[in-house]
Image 1 (cartoon, helix red, strand yellow):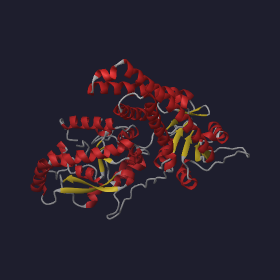
Image 2 (tube, helix red, strand yellow):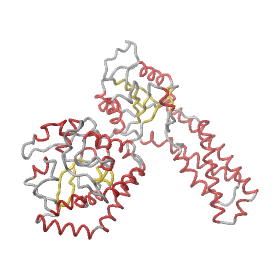
Image 3 (cartoon, rainbow, N blue to C red):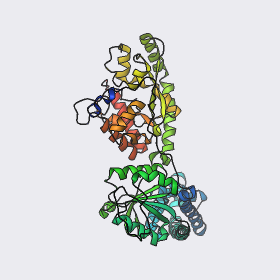
Length: 496
C-alpha cells in the first residue's frame, strides 16, 4: 500500500514546504469555509474523423494488401494467412506505421513494411512448424510461396499507402485544420509562411500567441492574438485542432504550461526546436514541416489506449485485494473499534483528477477534535492522542487498506500522485507553480515520489517534480515497477 502519510515536510531543507510557506499553513480559514480546488480546463477534442481517418485507412490498406497477396500467391492453408495478419498488424502498430503525420510518404514506409512483414512471416512459419507437419511448411515449395507472399504484400501495401496519401493530401488542401503558432518571432513567422504556402500539410494558421511584445509587419498575413494566457479562449473560439510551438518552447516554463493545456484540451501539439540537432537524436515520431524538424508532444496519459488497461488492472487487483485481505480488514476494524470507539472508518476530502474532490477512506488512527482540524492540520504522526493501535496501523500502512474501495469506485488508482486535501492543494499550488499539474491523472495509493523516499517530512516541490515526471513518462511497466518497489518498502516500514 502507500508509504505516504500526512506529516509536515522537514524544515531546514532548501525546498522545505514549511520554510517556503512560512506561517501560511497556520492561517486557518474560518469554520465552515469551503475551499474550492483550482478549476481545470475542459476538453475541446478534434473531430473524430481527423483523428482516426488516416490510421483506419492505413490499417485497411494493409489488410487488403495481405488478402490480395495471399490470393495471388496461394501460400498455403488459410490459417497461415490469418496468423500472418494477427502478427503483422500489431507489429505495424507498435512501429508507428498507423500514426498521423505531417509529412507522409509511401517510400518512407517501405523499409518498415518489408522488415515487419519478414518478421511476421518467420513467426508464422515457426508456429506452423510447431503445430503441424514440418515438411508441409518448411519444404522448398512452401518457402518459395511464402517469399512470394512477402514480396507481393510489401508491394501492394506500398501502392495502397501511396493512393491513401494522395487522397489525404487532397483532403488536407480542401479542409485544413485551424492552427495556432506559439511564438511570433522569426522562426514562428517562417513556420506560418510555410504552412500558408504549402497547404498539403493540412494546417491553416490563424494567428500567433506570444507573451513578449512583438512588432509584426503591417502587411503580415497573421496577427498577434495575445499571450499564452489567451490559449484556452482562442482554442475554443477558433476551434483550434493543432498548436505549433517555436522559439525555445522546451526551455520556457510558460510555454511548457501552455503546451500541457493545449494537449489537455485535445489539440495535437508540435514543437519546432530552434536547435535542429535536437530532432536528430533518434526520437521516435520525429516529423518535418517543409524542412523544419517537428517533434510531436505525446498525448496525455489518460487518453492513451493503455490507460484503459490500467483501469481494468486497477479494478481487478483492488477487488482481489479486498477479497483476499478481508480477514486483515476485519482484524484492523476490530482493533480500531476497541482503541478509539465507534466510527472505524475515517473519511476525508481529497483532490483528485482535474481538481475534483472525493472522499478518501482510511482506518481511524485518532479522533480529531473537529472537522476543521481534520481539514487543515497536516502533521498527526506524533500526536499524543494516537494509541498503540493507531501507531501500528500507520507504521505498517494498514490504515490505508480501505482505499482499495476508492480504487474500485474510480476515485483513485493503484499508482499515481498521492491525493491531498483541498486546503493544502490551494496553498501548495500558490507556492509551487507545477503542483497543480499533478492532477492530470487520478490520485494513487502509491507513486514515483513515494518509492524515491519523498514521503512524510520531505519537500513538496520535489514531490511535485517526481509526480509530473511519472505522468509525462507513464507506461504500464512503470506502474509495475512502482508497485514492486512499494512492496519492497513495506517489508521494511519506517513509520513515516
